[in-house]
Image 1 (cartoon, protein in one colour):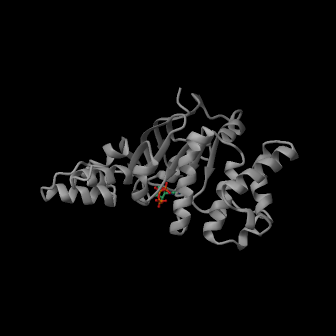
Image 2 (tube, helix red, strand yellow):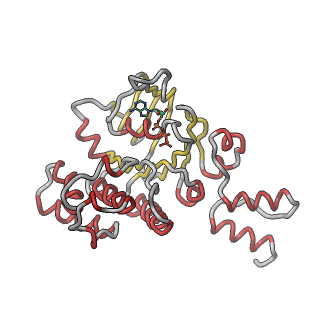
Length: 277
Ligand SMILES: Nc1ncnc2c1ncn2[C@@H]1O[C@H](COP(=O)(O)OP(=O)(O)OP(=O)(O)O)[C@@H](O)[C@H]1O
């Protein structure tokens, strides 16, 4: 049984002339890191909104732990699948950061002591200690983003879905957030699904990559499998990350160097190519 599965999922907004999602088949399993890539308007956010029942399919189905989402299990589904919206202003609204982070756990009906300990834990995990008493609407975009993530994390979902989590973050913020998200599956048993336009991070940060284009899944595989498909990438307006691009260029110039996608593998490939191992 998959944690999340869509079967031939189609979606059309009331105002849309065509299907915004068309026969989407997507699967998420335990402790996976899943990247969803695709150009603006490909349907990534629309797909994510199905995962915890914010919107419903026009046809096809969405199963969470093997069950369709119904009114009766919606509360459980939202405990299980936490969604961090693309725009933190849609998610952050309390008087202080601390209250904002506590809002979700309180709504789960947890007692005050458990809520307080969860709030402390995620505030420390996301480095929000200095902001805890601040008004969320006075925070910077990147700070708000971290508060929104903390609020969802405090509900301890088994699946964290993050819509462009690094949008608006500075380079250090991107590095810290991806480091944090990367550790969630191993450390907390959480499955992480995210969309991003930053392909550079994907080889380090994904077990499975889905590519979407015009509402359809056009590719699925490991980062290596996806980044080998030049046509797929160019149709989806995606660039090969810099390291494999550089290695490919060297190979095209006749230099004997093995393909590599992560920093560690690329370093090993260069050292080998230059006779340093
Ligand atoms: N609430 C809505 N009502 C009508 N159309 C919508 C709505 N939300 C999204 N759309 C349309 O659905 C399509 C898919 O949008 P979606 O936001 O899912 O794409 P996306 O891949 O997340 O894009 P981006 O990378 O820009 O965030 C777009 O054509 C968009 O204009």
